[in-house]
Image (cartoon, rainbow, N blue to C red; front, side, top):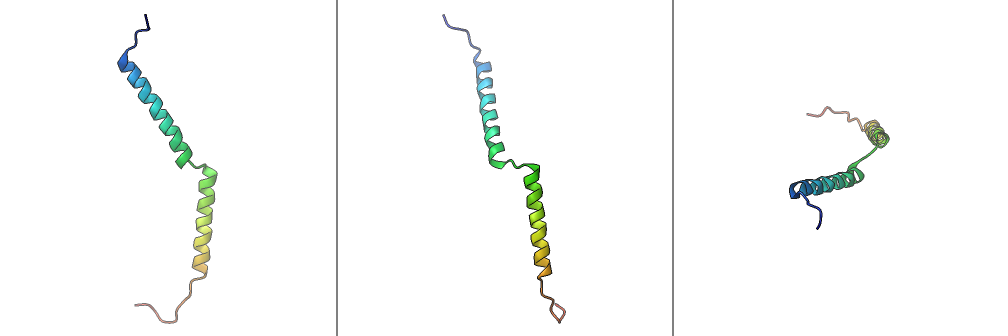
Length: 63
């Protein structure tokens, strides 16, 4: 005869495995290293400063 299997435990094990696989896929899809986040922040700051420096100043005050 075969091994006796508790179906509740088997379902929980299968769900846990599915969630772990989904989490691993999300880490690959959305995860970024701290260095990547820092590099993006520095690039955004550099672009902001460049844009701010190129802003034209008008002679008349805006209303």
